[in-house]
Image (cartoon, rainbow, N blue to C red; front, side):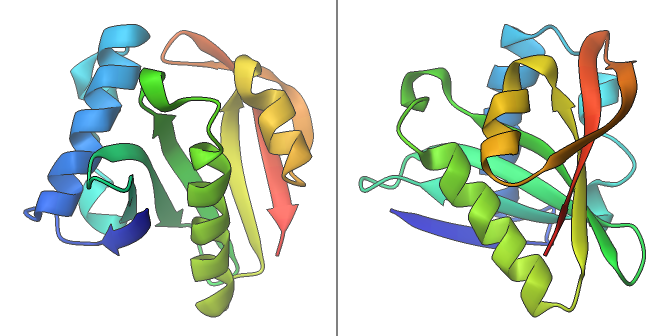
Length: 144
């Protein structure tokens, strides 16, 4: 297993991230492509977790909001690989990267079905429920 990252939206790593996101968000959840692929793609750091046979199985991206705060977005694990701890591993890698870069916190919009996952990882729910791509979410933040 390995986790790699890129800022290059022309790289194979980025294309693997988009393929996972396409499967999870667009096909499984019905998120429109114009919402899923947005104007921030080139401003983000994209992470992909590959299993032992080099299959891309999980992804997330980080968007710097300012000098202190990163926003974790587009975290997805291929359906057949869920429940194997890949989500935790890729989020921990994104947190480690953020901390190394001097960021103090990570914020994210968690789908309601993922609240428990993020709470176990130390994220704290903030504010009221909101809709994003017609899916219920809560804002969550973790201090690094």
